[in-house]
Length: 171
Image (tube, rainbow, N blue to C red; front, side, top):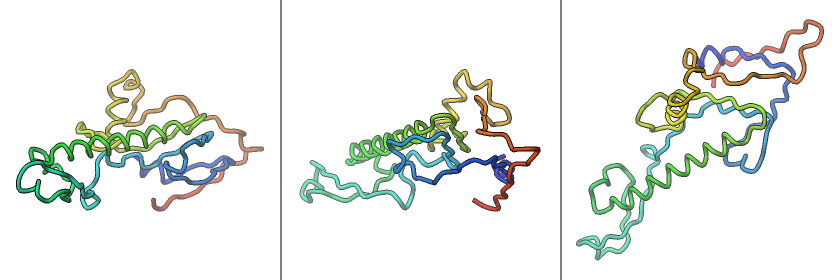
């Protein structure tokens, strides 16, 4: 499990570099990229739902001009369904683009942690899990972990020296 994996990590003289948001990494490349929480929502979430400013050509809303409606799935099958579907498409595309940027920064290695398994594709983790699970890579999944390729360290610890051990107590 991720909790077990994260309880002990061996660092073998690796320059851990810095932390960047995915947005700030656009246009940059790194030897290795670690994405620890690759399970953000594909859609707006609850209290973060934006207001959509929409028009209607039907009474009584046509007399008001632009009307602010909260973006929720309740807008389906209403006068504002087109605005809902447009925003739904945009936010999903934005999150696919974010995932693309995250996955294309690594030159040598990409390590991704996700808890996706939902067939509804509500998170990018669900998308990853569904894509890998429905491909030739499925046979490489062991105990819920996909390992593909191998990690090569820049140098081995000298003279029987053990790699430095760090303990993560929370994240």
